[in-house]
Image: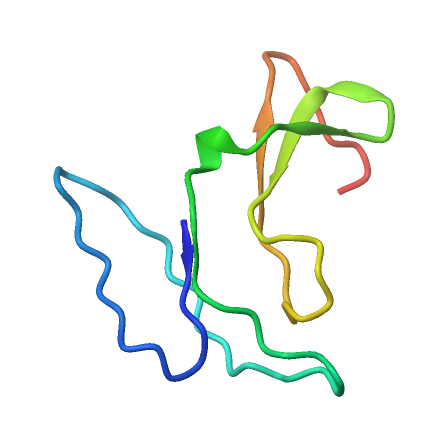
Length: 87
C-alpha cells in the first residue's frame, strides 16, 4: 500500500504480477497540522484488530490514526461462517 501526498510525482513499480486499488481524492488540509508525507507498507505487516469483541472478522487499518490524514482505509477478512450483522 502507498499514500502519495499532494504534489508527489512518485511511481509505483511492481517487480511481479500485481493488483492495485487506486483511491483518488483531493486532500483537505487540517488547520494547524502539516500534511502527511509519503507512506508505504504491506497490508500483511499490519496487525489485525477485531470489531468490538467479535473475533471472526479481522480489520487492518492501512492509514495511521492521525488527523492529518483526511481519510481512512481498512481491509476486512472473515473467517469461515463469519458474518457482519451490522451491515
